Length: 438
Image 1 (cartoon, one colour):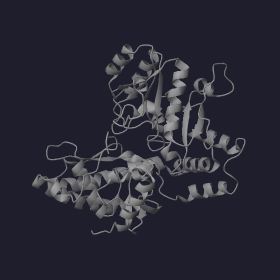
Image 2: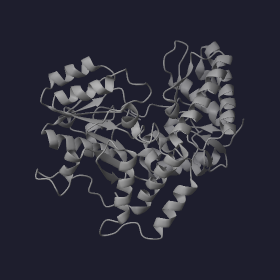
Image 3: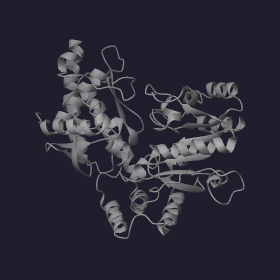
C-alpha cells in the first residue's frame, strides 16, 4: 500500500511556479487531493494512467468526464493522425466542417444547426448571448442545483470567486431550483419580460421528476424566454442524442462538449434553425457575433469528434457506460455495507455519471472524510474525484477498484469509531473548488 510521490511533489512545485494554481483547470488543482499525494500524470492508456513517479492507477472521471472511451482510443487516434498530415487550419472552411456538422446533427436530431468551438464555456456563453439577442432581454436564469456552466462573468459572478466582476453584471444573473416549477414560475413572474433564457442540465445526479422537463419548457415559453440545455456532461454519456433525446424534450438551444472529443478540444452550440441563423448570413435581423474563433474548427478535433460518434453508435458505448457504472456501484455499496459505513460512503447519480459522497459521524458532507477516502484509494491504485466510468474499464479494473474501496472503508470505519478523522490524516483536508480565499 506504500507509494512514493517524491517526483510528483517536485513537479507540483514546478507547476505552481509557472502556472497560477498549479493547473489550467481549478478542478485539477493539487488542493483537490490529499497533501503531498497529488499525482502528476505522465501518460494514459485505456482506463489507466501513470504518474511521474511510475505509479499506476485505475482512473475515474477521466479529463473531468471528457475521456469516455478511454485514453488513446485507437480509432480516435487514427482519425486525428490522418487529419494532422493534411493540415489542421485553413483560410476557408474545410469540407470536414460540413461532414462533422452533418454527423453531429444525425446523432442529435433534435437540433437543426450546429456550430463548433473549443471549450464548453464559449458554447454556453454563446447560447446566453444568442438568447439575449433573440428576446431583447438582459437577465439569464441559471439552475442553482447544477455546479458549473461557464468560466465567463455571467456565471462566475454567482460563485464565491466573483472578484473582478462588476456588480452590475452579477445583477443580471438570477437562479432557480431544479425540479420546482412553482418556484421557477415565481422567478419568471418577478422578472416578467426581463429573463432571456433559463439554462440547466436536463439531469445529473437525479432523474427529473415526472413531467418536469416538459412543464419547464412550456413554462419558459409562456413567459417569452428560451430554454437552454447544458449537455456538456449528459451529451453522449447519457445517450447518443443527449439528455434531450433520451427524455424527449427539445430545448431551443443546447451545448455539448467533453465526451464529444474524447479528450480533444471540441464543443458545440446546437439549436433550432430560426435561432441559430441569427449568427449566420441568411437572416434579416441584426447580426449576432456567434462563435467566430480561429481554432473552433480545427480538422483534427472534428475528426476526433466524428470518430467518437461512430464508436458510440457502432459499439453501443452509452449502454456500456451504464453497465460499467452499475457494476461498480453495486460493488462499492456491497463493501460499504460489509464494513458498516453504508450510511457514510454513498454512491449517487446515473450509472454513467457516478459520484461518491463522504459523510461524517453526524451524516453531514465532510471534506476531511473525503480526504481520507481519496488517500486510501490512491494508496490502493485508484485515482479520481468521482466514480465516473469510461468504457475502457474491464471487469478486472472494477474488481480492483472495489478492493481498494473495501480497504478505504475499513479505515473510514476506524475514523468514525474514533470520532476523530484528523488522527488519520497527515496533512490538510482537500478544499472546495469555489472558495473566496486560497
